[in-house]
Image 1 (cartoon, one colour):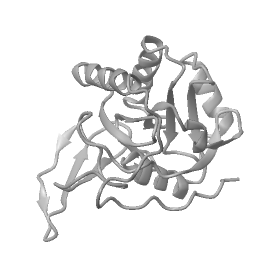
Image 2 (spheres, helix red, strand yellow):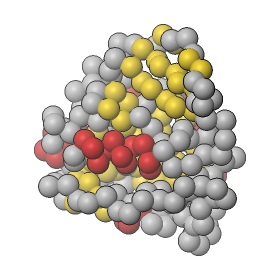
Image 3 (spheres, one colour):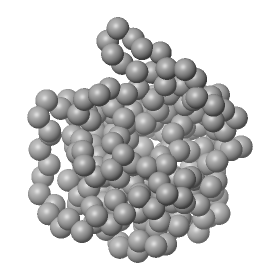
Length: 227
């Protein structure tokens, strides 16, 4: 990807646009030099802890409603993709499959969110999941209304979600539903850091209810189920 020069806004918000021929015309990330909150970028490692993930309901690759309450007490990784991606999405999901194969702990799950719901129906996602021999008990592919997907991506994953445009990062949540960090799935060194982060969070056995960080935004009410 080619880095576009940084633009500094009066509010000190830094807008970085990455342009390339990957999964879309650009990837946008909004960064602020403060503690991580809902809708803000994920930290690079286990040092920062976000607020509790925002509840959501979408539709999985089997055509069934998926309620994020199912993730309670689990360590899980979120990522964004779309099935017809002409660029790195396949390699991104190969990395997810590799992580799941190496970390066999049943308390670790993966949730992959499409950014092209018009084309990525449950049937399409099911066929796509089969290409990775995905265990439906541990790896869920989700679709639904684009507005809901965008909200989940931004408010829960802390990642950009637009049609055909997405991040190539995996983000990790602990058993309390807190965003613990994220790393690039396509960079070998970053992938190794991501695996280490997952193992670190899995080793934390305390599953007590999470308390939002000081000054953090309060999670909104659950998103309504999509048709």
